[in-house]
Image (cartoon, rainbow, N blue to C red; front, side, top):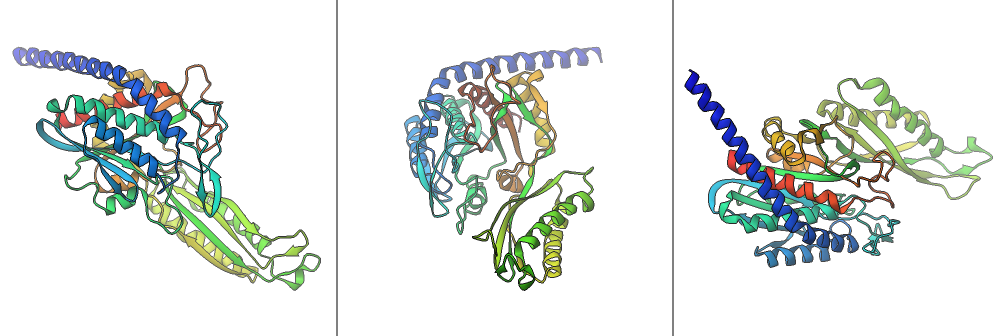
Length: 430
């Protein structure tokens, strides 16, 4: 028995030494690749493009991959790019994903590589900015592709690099994003065993990783509510049917679904009306209006109940005001769900990449991510990596999707290190 214990202890020590050597090799490769990654990131930031319109972005990704040595496939899910690395040793298949689209936001950050791009969104000319950090995701994944190519003979398996368009949502009337990639078979040929994705975060310090098992980001649904009344002079509301008053009552009543129907100790949920469009003049009650909103849930049963109650509450409220109503709710994204066994298997890798003290196990957040469509098909792990520079207070920096959003170049090194570690550890341990 004593010999067995000593033997096991020796194996543990040897594995620890091998892991340390392995991590130092990755650190060295990241340091050598970081300059290229920063340069690539600046180009993608300066040339931001909207969802399903990432033509120049895709072209540049394909050019870089080709320069490295890959034979990338373009036009996947409209503007996506996919490349495959076949390692020198047999093994499983890992998918690595980066989203590539920007947002209709005007950049206010003073940078030499700030975006000046203009594009069309919902029929209007709008400025375009990488206001959520997808430019860094592209740079990180290209860096990982470069590093893995340099050691491909030692890689025990296959790596599929997925540069995904339209994470922010396809334009009206179009398909796009992860859902379309899955539909077109991006997880097949070769069949992907597990997939990893990350998101840089402006409110998280550089050098920090945030992750959790099970649901890490919420399911999301968008809704539109059309209300038709009867137009009247503002001085004589009794001659009409007021869609504005009806809308106000619906908004208030929808909030009772969350506060009175949902068991919020089980999981959070949110209903938000973000826009109301109707009316043209201060003294005219309009004939109709429409409202736009979002629904966020982290529990499947609660999601079903909320969607049903929204239709019921909105319809009954409109009927009580003699107004006509139509409620439209989209298919949305499912919960971004970190499969527990994969999470437990790979958490030590994240702790080695960042240092155990720099990995935070967080509560779920009500943001949403279409990476969840990949996770519906195969086990996936999604995590956050810090982008807030050391001299800034994470609590005071601008949020994502805002004109002042900024993440520091230095945050990408940990992203590369983590993705390299996850890939090689998974392939080796499968």
